Length: 446
Image 1 (cartoon, rainbow, N blue to C red):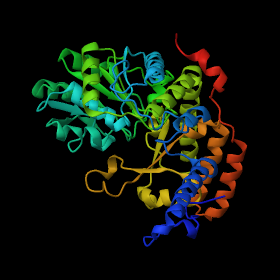
Image 2: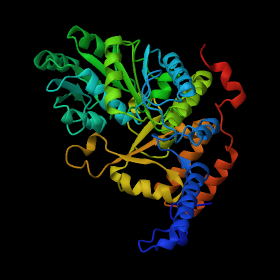
Image 3: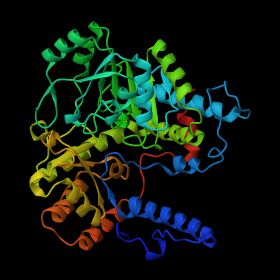
């Protein structure tokens, strides 16, 4: 059983390696990769809400013959010969994504959710125009803040006016309507790294549509929940374009999607992608396709398990004495929950203590950190994506909350907690919500 400090001395980086050590370096890199994989996936309780785990079928295809024979371009419009099989994989990818997200148009080539945001922003805006975005104070992603893609697009960024609420922003709709009338934005952008509840999207899109404003929904964290019909239905509720990551609540490889039901916009997205992305990792698209097929089969039940676990874990942690945000709203409706660690040593120290106990988490800014303490985040963010895929339930959430309390409140020795983490993991070593390779074909849309 490893912990974060268990790197063998023989594998630590040595700046003074000699030319004759090349083979040794290759061996070291391979060993470190294997140790990382074992530690993070087998030895640890991974509660990082931006992480998930691919099925064996999806992971295996990443190192297949698709990995190093890149074929760029679009289906049936490529400069390289030899794309016969790649075209068919991409067609399946589009068809499956279209069914999952109720979208007529799918751009699958972005290699991260951040890149998907950039391409979408460049497609729905013109240089020099105004955009209104979700506020930084409530978790807005850096890609659509002033120093992100809007800076390079010369966009003028204003933030949606929000009241404090119970730890998550509550939109001030009268002020928002005044702002839209005053600055006439081209686009309103929603999206957060601390998304606990669905946005009031129908009301937002109704206001936006009256003013001819596009609504871009950055669903990076909740794409798997959307695919499972559990969290929100962006297109049914009026969103113009949906972007997202494919490795958070979606259990796929690192990548991004851009989806729309607007053909002129979809054409712009495709053209922008042509100009900004050449090679797009065909192996990643194939692995993503398998992950999405699994969501066709199991997405609803998996999303239900993830959200129930998040709420259960939040309730258990609150009973243990932690200050979990949004208690008045029963903490969360998504895959994540947030603990305010301001009065308990801060989030940075909490993350390190948990890591020593083989429990992985994330430090993140919360509203109380603004504006003076954004470099000292108070928020500890936990997610139930990966542990839910191993079929843990409410009983295990109580156990995990107890382990976290014993680590952060009781200050028990990390080696004691590690042993109990290992015992718990051993009981849930079988990945669920996956298809046998022989069964995948039956879920491919005709």
